[in-house]
Amino acid sequence: MSTRHWIPLLLLLAAGTTQAATPAPLTLDEAERLAVEQDALSERSARLAEAFEEEAVADEQLPDPRLKLGLANFPTDTFSFTQEPMTQLVVGVQQRFPRGESRRIRGERRQVQAAEQRARLAERRRKVRQETRKAWWELVYWLRAEKVLEANRGLFRQMVEVTEYQYGAGRHNQQDVVRAQLELSRLEDRLAKVRQEQDRARAVLARWIGDAAARRALADDHPDEVSLPALEVLVERLPAHPLLKAEQARIEAARKGVELAEQAYRPGWMLDVSYGLRGGENRDGSARSDFLSAAVMVDLPLFTANRQDRKVTAARRRVAAAQSVRDDRLRELKRMLESQYASWLRINERLTLYRERLVPETAQNAIASLEAYQNDNADFTTLLRARITELNTHLDVERLHRDRGRVLAVIEYLAGEEQ
Image (cartoon, rainbow, N blue to C red; front, side, top):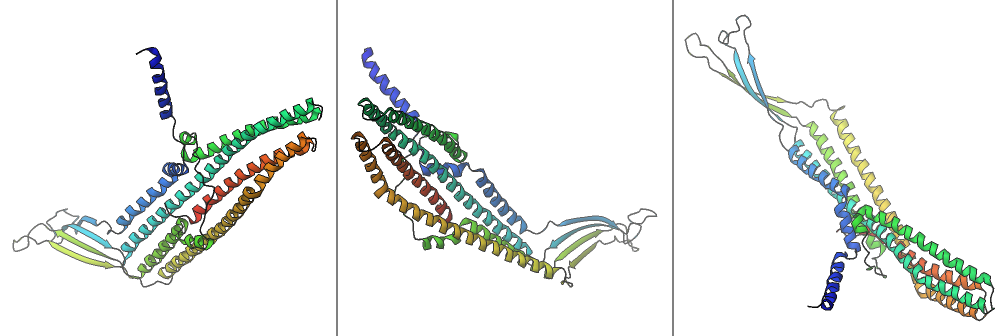
């Protein structure tokens, strides 16, 4: 095959290799997934939940038995094991049985504490997704702002050309040309600042998803129209928030503490079984028999006023304190949801106003100002103000999209469905 036939094939292979090496644009869903997978604090809560579950099994078991080994009634004058009939080698076992249902209650309290950690794990994942979405929308805004400025750079260059033509024709003075060039330079400076903000926003996003993922291009899959249920529907979801579930678990753990304190009114007991091995012979020549001993020791909770009663009262106070924290959390989440929902409504109103009136009106004003300037019916200040107003209006639209995305991230954290 000739060289001229190889060249197109090599170019095709090179293009395919380049395309394969370029990573796909990063979607918001993928960014959230990466952030959750890489979050170290989520791993902490998961491990704590597993630890409490292991402790729950351990707390339900009986205490370890005690082995007793000793000498009883050993004579010190001869140190003979067979001299005295009551001398014996004692081997025994003691087993303690905790009060009432305390073992079961301790195990259940550990299970509740494990449930609290699982709820905090779910809350942490919500928080990670929220912060990832906010960082995502911040970067999206600066990328879109760059596109807006790039699109307007051509218009500002056109404005320079128009002023140069008008000045060359003797219809306007040189100051218009200088001011037009100045505004073009200011636009270039704004572009540099926007790119600086892009770097900062990308660094914030990288804190959640990693440097490699943050360097990828972002997928342009952001819907312009976003709907939400009514505020009342979202408020009804708040009790299912993981943070409130965690606080509810703390209440349940405190209630288990009350049950455990109440077990102190019931006696605990211990079983003691011993075997005494004797040596020597009786007077009739028969071998001395061994001894078997058994005893039961019981706690007597007779004086409860300054011990058991006060511990139960303290445990009940902890339940009330935990309930107060949970109620305060609910009020705070409700206040945040109402505030964010109001912001979402106002942002949508403003976006509608911009889309239906301000964007087309500023565009028409810019065109009309240019025509008026070219026909000597308007000065350069009017034209310049119209162009800058049109530019800032487009940036305001992108800023509102950014703000709405960040607000939705908070609402999703507060009242979103579990993932």
